[in-house]
Length: 631
Image 1 (cartoon, one colour):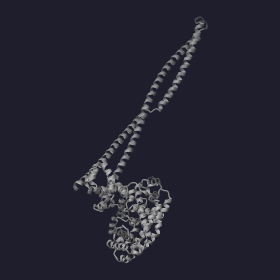
Image 2 (cartoon, helix red, strand yellow):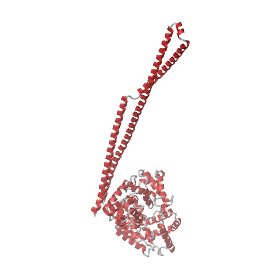
Image 3 (cartoon, rainbow, N blue to C red):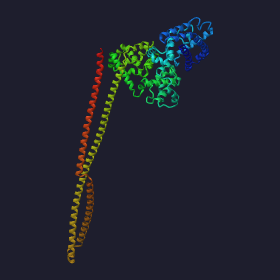
Image 4 (spheres, rainbow, N blue to C red):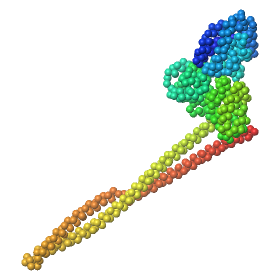
């Protein structure tokens, strides 16, 4: 059964090589691969016949690494025996050998083609030969790699049983690295992403419009910008990456799209078709804490930073103190580790191996690897300032693992990781955040009250100013009216005096006229001349004119007095003025009360801030005392 799976993987590897050659535009190599496809088919038939005699032996052996190695060794022996070698003259002609050599060269070129969807894993490049050529006399494939292929083929075929009964052995194998050609299927099995109902919705989702499309298009070119599969504009890689990100943004509208998630999807697309990558990414978001990491609030990222910082404080106290002294926050270097699972911080072969373990064990590996990296670089980091540490994390550390991740993975599992302690830290973080939120709510409430009180004070001040203005204006108007009234009264008195004088003169004139009329005519003629009579008549006319003018002036002054009295009646009397003054005093009292309340609120805010500062000081003191106790 394992041998059959082995041969299926061989044939699938060749088919995938042809597909990758097409995706990369390597039409020339594709034609060569087509030319030798027939020869390969006959060679595979021969391989199947060559190892058929080992099937009975493998069926009787227990599925352990030792038995698989024995089986692989026997298989390798049978394959390399002179009588069964594919290069033997009895089996293959010189033309066949030449075609196989060309096929081997094309396979090597396909493996080194960075545009291939399956060019991430370096184990196959290190072997220097394809699986097909392992059946030839010039094969370089080691027995260890053959054992690994056979073992993983059996694990895939018997996945449910292995996952339930041999979970520990499975974890050990994943930590050593999943073979490149098994990675797609094993990742799907590890996260249980096979046969998901949401896969059937994928094509429908692509027909819909997402509100995040502009953001996704903008960031596509920033995702693996140096990788051949993604760097060309509107390439196949960019198109499938856009499709998967768009589909997920429609499925999970709360998260929508976050740039860091594109790197994870990009890695998945390097291993599998877009529908399968979409299903695996959906599982990772829902069951591997990634959804909480990528939410707009990023609350889970804050929790991870708190837990990771606590681990540094406990296991690397000197480095923790140095980070605190330099104000070098954990998020400045570790946030991308958690958001992209090291994909943006380290070479892809390294990050892919870590991603293998992440698929099996979750975020725990990020904590372990992150602390292992800090342990390995502690001596250098302690000697650097904040800017130097940033440069060290960006330029030095990523190239320390070019040879492979085995060393850091081994160191990662020497790191102390206590799941119960992490749960405790999660509760502490939740308590701290809840308290901070409550204090922020209280401060927000006090600030709102403060703002409302200030608005009320402003309103009262405006009302007070308005009342004061009205009172002053009323008093000024009253004074002006009183002055005008006084002037009118003076004028009226003068006119009355003039009127009385005119009346007296008129009466005197009338009296004189009556006396003249009563005297005899003769006497009048003798005593008074004609001129005196005319004079008296003129004086009479003038007296009557003055009387008429006085009457008119008197009428006008009376009208003016009436008008003044009406206007005076509309002015506030002493009672109204007193009422306005009382109202102004009341406004002043309310203003004083509001100012007192504002002072009390300000004192409460200051007390809360002092309490918060003392809380921060106690927390910082506890963190600083912890390294001393550790020493």
